Image (cartoon, rainbow, N blue to C red; front, side, top):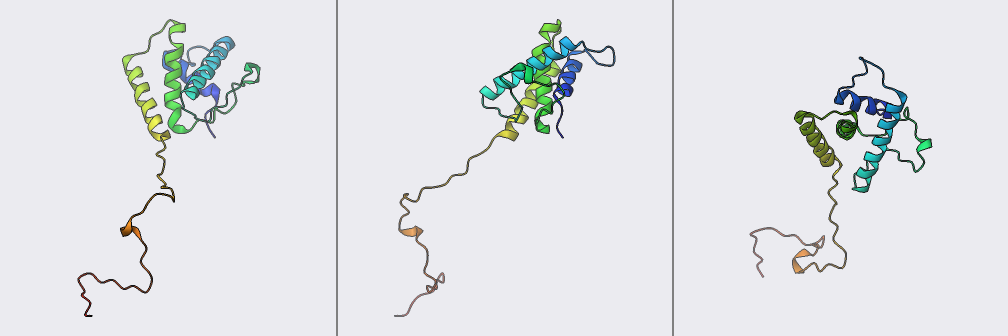
Length: 148
């Protein structure tokens, strides 16, 4: 089970300093956080970072209690990125440590998601004389000389 969108939005508000144990967030703030989360994930997707986050063209289909489908390696980067995104609208600034933590988490996430493609040579590539298969009846012994 993955983190829900609500847990990610609450984590971002907690990172900014709006801890939910001091006071409850208004529904408008939660919806604004969800909208900012969707916009951020959409821009990451446009940059080639596909995490499996469900994106909708219609904002009325979005549910804050829906699972985010994020891999665990991406959760910290998403929470810190969202916190960095919503902080100015709340009149807050992120600490240098939080910004550095976001950079580290984002880079770790990208390293995890990076896929090194395997190299397959086409059948039409010239092999050369030394790349032939040996016949099964051919016994080759290094250093042996034939007499005859």
